[in-house]
Length: 132
Image 1 (cartoon, one colour):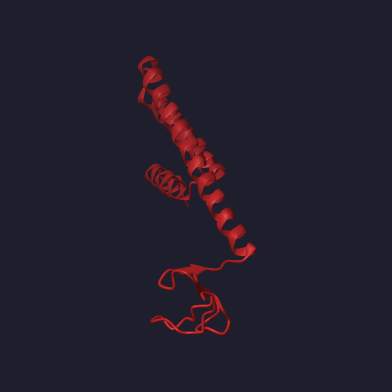
Image 2: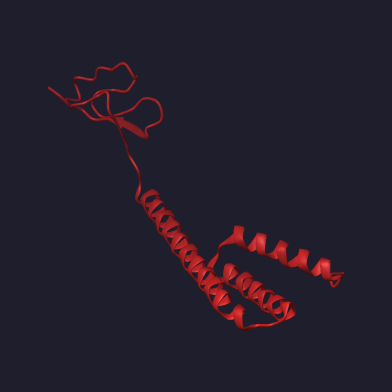
């Protein structure tokens, strides 16, 4: 009879067919299908996995929102720069937008974009001779 405590025979993987595992107690085999292991998880592990999934979804959403604002700024620049005459005006607007994008990247948690924008900002300032 399957699952009978008296009938404790080991299969090829070393686990006992009645649902116990002799190696670490974490992986058990199904009594009807001893070749398919079942992973036993605790509630804390399930909660941790769900929290990681929620955090990944939230990070993805924040990154999409940041890209939307970046795209919107580019469109506004394309429409607005045709009315500006001087290159200095355009440069100052781009510099101001760069500061705003750094703040938005920090707020939305898009670290890799923040790193690139900060390095670009520092490069611009060093070219102007303003960085100490």
